[in-house]
Image 1 (cartoon, rainbow, N blue to C red):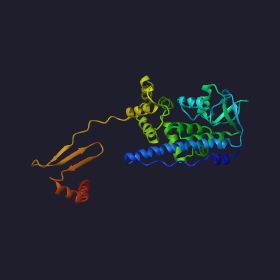
Image 2 (image 1 turned 30 degrees about the horizontal axis):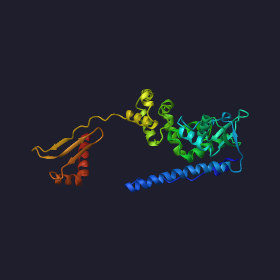
Image 3 (image 1 turned 60 degrees about the vertical axis):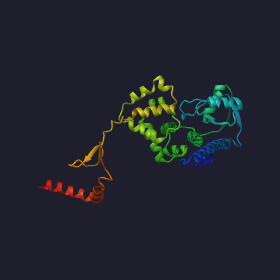
Image 4 (image 1 turned 90 degrees about the vertical axis):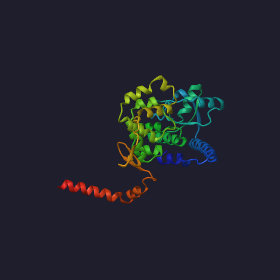
Amino acid sequence: MSRKNLLNLIQVDAGTPLKGATSDNTLVGQVATTMREEKARQARADEIERRLAAGQSVIELDAALVEPSFVSDRMPGEIDGLVASIRDQGQQVPILVRPHPEASGRYQVAFGHRRLRALKALGLPVKTVVRALSDEQLVIAQGQENNERQDLSYIEKARFAQRLRERFARDVITAAMSIDKTELSRMLSIVDAIPAELIEAIGPAPGIGRRSWQEVSDLLEKTDPAAALQRLRTDEMQERPSQDRFKALLAALKPKNAASRAPDVLTTSSGRQLGHVRQSASKIEIILDRKDAADFAAFLLTDAIALFEEHRATINATEDT
């Protein structure tokens, strides 16, 4: 099958994100909408696989003969729910495999890795559709199916892109992941900046998006990654859910705010209080009392620029003499 035909076969429109809730009723409605959209995404992902299986023979293989894709896309995670579902209902949708390019009699998964793991755990054969796929076709099918299911976390997708980069051109990666070159560059810059051992110690961190990972990447430039890794590998941290490990690391990396300086009181020589002055390393704020300094505040608002330019002119005249 050509790459174009494969893309046409598995391309599905993405859902529309929800806007923020403005009331309890709106929130309930949006939660319901989110659940419906998630079910719809799941249905579309299943439909991808059913369409791939259409007109093809579904055969059962010994799960021991089936190997994962040559490009890993997932970090270790629990599959207890999937194991229970397959135990109770059986395997509802076949997985897509290709004949192994280097081992006769064996097969390699394009998609369906979690189902394969669950079936191996149960000691059951795996229902498959076998197709001859090139390396490019396999990773495009693998990436597109994962993208539609939306069950890979951001960092898993970024690491998948990083692994694909070792073997494929960027146009293949963007096609596989349904992203543009700009987003691909962002993903790669983040995952390249964070040590692999640190990412693995955090785990997949579901629900943690690009901005938060970018923040960790930026903060690691100012600290020792080895210290962060040591913190993450403690038993107490590893017992936490992956996303909680991420949040704890982010909090630890952020610089501690110095005690805020109390604002200075702005007073006249006669002792009249006009307002307050707040100073930090980057700015000075003058806060005037509307009651006691209304006229002066109006004067500043009107003539502040003129006063600044007059002050600069005085300095320049002094420097020229």
